Image 1 (tube, one colour):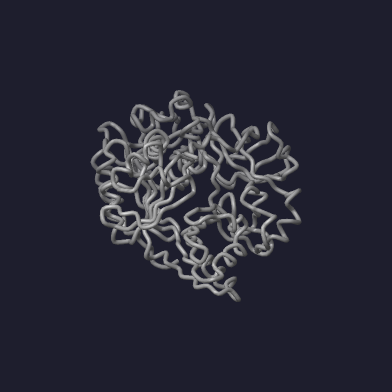
Image 2 (cartoon, helix red, strand yellow; image 1 turned 60 degrees about the horizontal axis):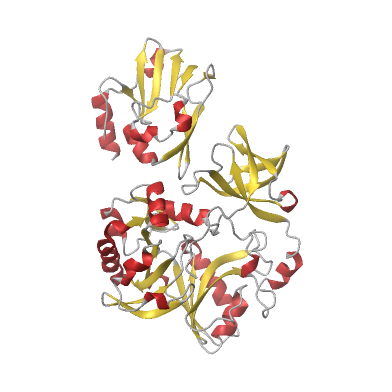
Length: 365
Length: 127
């Protein structure tokens, strides 16, 4: 590991009393006011996140569309200008390189948003796949700051800072060059919480003033949200996190992401391997509800004395007040209502398979 | 940060109140602040025999599970079952929300515990 990086908002985190940890090579806050309080504020009002650690790659050139369609599993060809797509990049064997957002600006101009911990690996992978395509790939991750404003009051707060009518940005669409306090921002109606909200991409040197302005304008409606609550929010909405629900040993079908894999599009990397297992994946991502205790990542899932899988993420859900978890288990045991045992330290705790959509998403579609 | 006069403290940010050979055991204000919102406490059973260094309690915050090691050899003679329903009382009132009472076999295992002043000095150094 090299030296830890800081986002342009590091000083803001310290000022706001954030408890700083090492996350994906960045010094970022794990919590400010407290994970549960931050979590609930996003669900009921609004929260502001620094996600500047995320990576951004631009794809420009005559073959941009063809290149991206070959790279990812979802249907890129159906996108219109300024539409955004959630998708996955896979290896030839069908396991996941990363999950990402694809922004289509124009047919020859795409913008890919990838996970911080994977930036170097992803960019190397993209460069390797770019051979034979007439495109230019640029990793602009270090130049781009990203804020996320999420929650039922996100739109009314952000609207007070921009002269563009935000209702014109539909779910999973974006608008470039929106003027925010003199800064030019890319704004999309996307997020990672299960709530309505926006992701805002800016030049690094513009990030702090926009961050401060959102907190000032928002007043009691908004609070800064750190990584701890970011994880509980995405978990409740059953949004996967690379390194947990997906990684280079799990394919998207096992992870329950079939709707983001379009087999009727042109060839994409990993398509053949996925076609071979799509109707009968060996493993399945399921939701679990525990009678008591909390199942953390790595906890073994048993039926009798046989290990059938492991927990990928588990929390006492702040929104539900119940102990729930996601687990990757052998498909044959994955039926709804099945009972399993969790080996939590020395104790065996019973759990039941339930819908993994713990929290109903409140998107504006 | 609150530190009380009549308790003993260790470097793990735990407190005890000693009456005869019975130690009432809990975590300090500093500890609860570091852990963040506590959502579950896994308690030992009454009459469990514990040895110094045994993992005997698990405190779960939203983010993580933290094992608590027994500071002494002894027997658990009481557990605070109120924590089952109100684990957050460890955050709200860490010196009232005791966790267990231990009958201590060898009181010399508590020789290194600190008084209020020494513990405050220790915390100042940690911060």
